[in-house]
Length: 202
Image: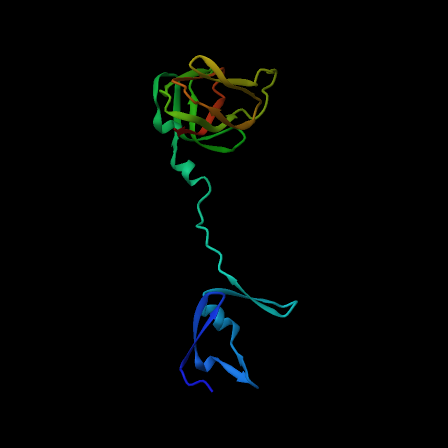
């Protein structure tokens, strides 16, 4: 017979306390409710239906969920918002619709149909430039086979990245800008455009 309203017990150095009304006994054997024991000891209680067994296990430390690339995103600056240029032949638009009908956001658009360039003063403050390049022309024009246009990125007069794009082609790019002071972008036709470009700060 249990006289105390509570029972204190120890299991592998863990001490728990249960209300007496949860404790049963028969023929000299004392029975404890497993779930109540687990909760009293701050253990996880699990039931295996196949083996019909109950397990008590240490609770696993919860890992805080973080948003993917959150730190990287906070370290990025939208290219067109920075505008560290000292001369240019381009415009910036919030959105641009290619001939295919696809819409692009935050677009660097070179004004001259024969191409253009932009010079940026980076002063070694950035590590990468990433974004999307696209050719706004959707198909070859009649009697015209010269719709593959090229764009070049040069850092301190050294070629960092170049790409020729066919009509309606787009490609994601990521350029290493480590220790680059001056960035120059050249295109040979205004159909080549840059969307959602971002600079990553050191």
